[in-house]
Length: 196
Image (tube, rainbow, N blue to C red; front, top):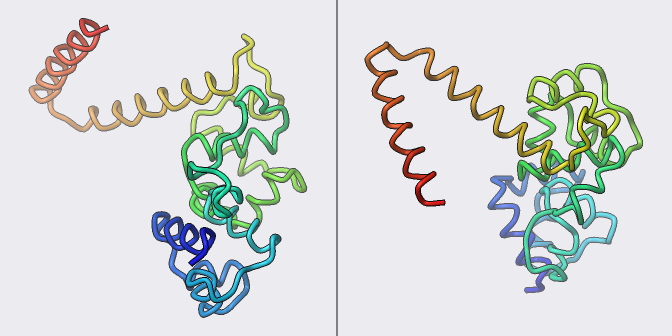
């Protein structure tokens, strides 16, 4: 088996995508995916690129040219276009296009077009990204009140998102349980700050 066939099989399974799902997205029969994965056939470069996009990995990884799976934009600070910022967000959260598209309520091919810059996001997609905690000024224009790298913006958004999820869970607890969790958090935070 070639490096491509082995890695295609491994990545597809790790992303919980069936051969049938991948075949449907590519517009081929399921048997064709089986041929790709067993090394009986190898797709064209165009089809390989499409497979990499669908599975949220890089073509270099699938072809055995990169040792690490997944996309990693060369530098988060290079997120200079709206299309690239959308791709950076998806990559930061390590989501394949299919899963991230579902989160945005659009098709995988629509997300692919957004990431290539061939289409612009709808107001609904922008609202959903905003609800995820992303500053729309940064998303649309790459600007924030203070000049920050895309990585800093993403990490702060991820932190805010997790805090809001924890807050929602805590609101459901009775007072005695809240006090217990506060005490546990205080102990944990004290231990973390001592270790630094």
